[in-house]
Image (cartoon, rainbow, N blue to C red):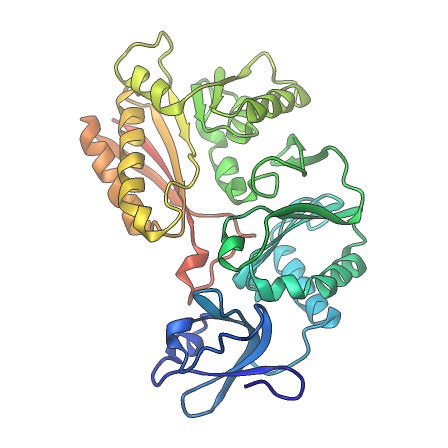
Length: 398
C-alpha cells in the first residue's frame, strides 16, 4: 500500500532484515512478505521489518529480482539537495588520494550510497550510467546537483549496460547537458589519453586499473612486453613510458586499436609501442607452442568479463585458466605475467584457484609477487561483496 504521498510500504518476511541491518542496500523480491506487482518501476518506498520497524527508504521495482534499493536509513526527500550531499561526500572522499579537478570515478553506485548510479569525470565532461529504474526517475535532481557542484561542460548518459533490461529500461546513448566534444584528453599516471565519450566501451575509460598500472612501473624496464585485450592501450603505454624495450598491444576491435595507436602518438611513443588487431587466444596458443619469433619478457592479460552471471562462472574460470596457462608457458624464467579478472561473480578465492590451476597446467614454477584489486575510487562496501569485482595479480616464472 502507498501513503498519501505515493510512497510504498514494503514489509519483509520474518528474519529477512539481517542483510539490511548489516549494511547491504538491497532487498530481493523473495524476501518481501508481499510484492505489489501493480506498482510502477522505481516507485519511492520505505522498508519495514516483519514486526513493522522502519529500516530505511529507497525505491522499488516489481520487475526486478532486486526489488528494493536503499538510499537512506530514515525517510527523506530525494531531491537536488540530497544528491548534492552525496556527490560532495564522494568528491571529498576521493580528494584524500587524487586530484579531484582531473579525471576519475566520482560515484561508484552502492559504495557511495547511490545504488544503480555510476558517474565518471573526464575533465569537464561527466558520463553517467543509470542501472536502476528508481535512479532513472531521479535523473532531473541528479543532473541539477551535478551542474551546480561541478559546472560541467557536458553530461552524457552511457546507458548501454544489459542490466538496464532487467530493470525494464531502454538502452540509450544521449547527452542531457551541454555539448560533448568528439574526444576529451585526460592524463593518468603521467600518460595522456584521448577518450571518446560517445560510442566505445563502458563510460569511455577504465579508471579501475589506475593504481595497478602505476605499481607495475618498476617492472617494465628493458623488457619486451605483450599487452592482450589492450583497448585504449593504457597498460602498454605505461610500459613504454617506464622503460620497456619493445611493447606490442593486441585487441580484437579495430576501433580500440585505432584509439590505442592515437594515444601512442599523443605520448610520443609510436616508435616503441605498436598495436594490432588480433585474437588473444590464437596468439597466446601460438606463443605457448613456440611458433612466434618474438619471445616476451612480460605479458599483460586484462580480458573482459567472462562471467556475466553466476551460471557462467565455471566456464569463465576454465577460459581464464586456459589463457593464463598459455601465457605462463610462453615465458622464460624471470618472465612476468600481470593478469586480471573483472567480474564480481568471480571471488578472490576463485581467482587465486584459477591461477594455481593455470600454473599447474603450464608446467612452470610460478611465484606470486603481488595481489591487488580495483582503484580506490571504486571503493568496496564491506557488507556488499558485489562491489568487489576486480582482481589483479603479478606472477613471475622461476
